[in-house]
Amino acid sequence: MKTMLSGIFAAAFALTASAAQAQDKPPLKIGGILDMSSLYADITGPGSETAAKMAVEDFGGEVLGRKIQVLAADHLNKADLSANIARDMLDNQGVEMIYDVAASATALAAGEIAKARNKIVMFNGPGSIRLTNEACGPYTIHYVFDTYGQANVTGLAAVKSGLDSWFFLTADYAFGQDLEKDTSAVVTKTGGKVLGAVRHPLNTSDFSSFLLQAQASKAKVIGLANAGGDTINAIKQAAEFGITKGGQKVSPLLAFVTDIDSIGLETAQGLLLAEAFYWDLNDDTRAFSKRFMERTKRVPTSAQAGVYSSVTHYLKAVKAAGTTDAAAVIKVMKETPINDFFAKNGKIREDGRMIHDMYLFEVKKPSESKGRWDDYKLLATVPGNEAFQSLEQSRCPLVKK
Image (tube, rainbow, N blue to C red; front, side, top):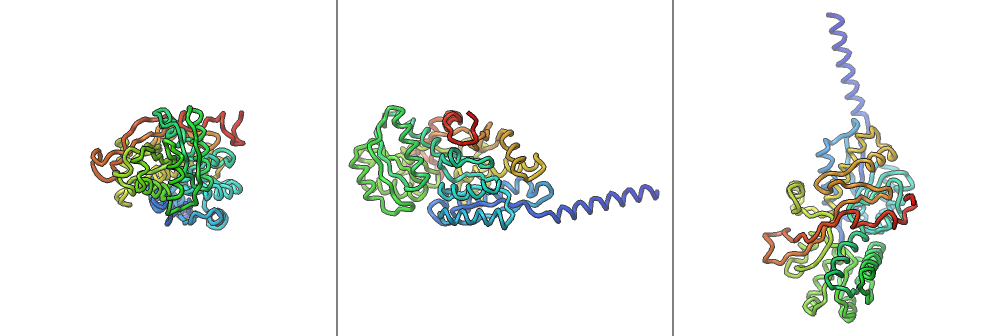
């Protein structure tokens, strides 16, 4: 009896000690660097923070005996501020992984800070192809979309349908420049012509002079190499000036369902656009989106859905690796296929590009929509190995050739 009691007490003591030790462990912190208040706030912003928190909750709230804590900060679309936030998160706040980093210039800045500290950074909101080319790193993952994929899916479809002359309205920073360059390459390779381009400042309210130049070019397509509020304003003003009624097609090279909601179907109908995700694709996307909407009162964008998926993939890898060491975790992440509502048989390549299907949509007419957010008709599903830049084309120093 004494032996039995001592065994019970010893086991109880061990469990208590283990629980106490777990409570003493610092939390595992992941940090989002987001646009919380400006032109990309609807695309990422508070919705990306919500998606990250949902992923953590669904995972169980802890890993390796450590509570998981989600941080978020507003970079105000300033690259220097983004770098400072990343530095503070990694050096002072104990953050192990950075997620989202909406906008390309801010992502490139934060990515360099994470790279210098050998920390994992997962990009969901930015699009610049530079993130997996010249700026790639051993712990850098570009998860949702990029300028090459957007250009390839949208530009190729447009030129094949006869829309073979283009003029670009380009946001004058890394993302816009890369999107114009990549789309131009697709247009010319497919037999089309680029008649010109004009660059506008980020967060432009008046597009009149830029649109008049595009109109004067007589190009069949005015390609919008911008995003968020800039895309919304350009499309609305093109309609006001009668440009679309005059026969020219406006093509947003990066648009999200929240943009279409802001523009309205009356103005946006017929637009062709590429997306990595749509809430109404299938039962799995609808189930996640319903839960997301209960919290945010709007459907998730592809960037926000990608945040949930990427954070979940990261946490699963931490658990499998038994450590938060970046080298061990990234190895598991690259070896493990991604199968969830966002991607089927997704794969993270050696250059950090997550390969997954992309989708070509046409915006519905008002008469075709059943209600708010019912905005897209699926035209084509493009396999990831056709949508994204091949490893043979990669300029990432990590890629073996």
